[in-house]
Length: 301
Image (cartoon, rainbow, N blue to C red; front, side, top):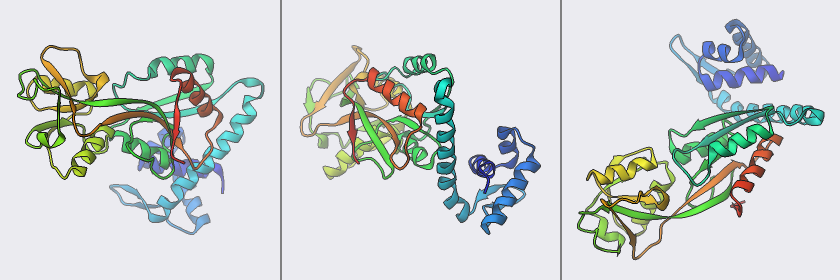
């Protein structure tokens, strides 16, 4: 089994299209197809179910994908360790992040990383499916590092280092009936319309769990993907929202309340995969994160 064949397999598995995979690999499509057929013959299985309209992973292909990524990661780490002798740090770091989180100056951090390690390629992806999607991408091998918010213990295969914890506060319009109160019990909010993030986002999970624990239900009538947008929706009378303190603007037309019976806390963590050793470039990035955000703490195993 050649590493090149595994590299071609991973590219096709991620693109689910032989033409796009060949462009990504800078190899003619016939070469990619031949490599996949060779790998299938060697392993005695079909890795992709192909039709004229689509390409999908077979069960065998789905089982091979994480192992293929791990093998390529190990080979890459070995190559980078040799190259680092006298040549400086090299390699690639695939980073996932949420949007609009000012706790960590990610552009500034990555800019410093680039200046210190110009031989490392940085690839950044913003999560379209929230923190749960970022965690899944870590486990599958698509990402090396993710900045995310996950309530409770980390999922299997994910290691977390907490960077910050911030209270979630209730934000209402200044003319809302609750605006004159400093705090309210959670059950007082069951008849309200809420603005929140879609399922899969950390702050959505925190609030959903709090209502479930209280045996209460709520109505989420608007879902947003950007923390900064939540306050704007509240301002225009579309509902109320639980937001991290840093996401609430200092504005006269908004009021901020706390809960009298429960404390809700939003946390930001940097996550890596616990089942494989980070390469040298990832370790250097994590060291830089510790310098930018002192006092980080490991969560879970």
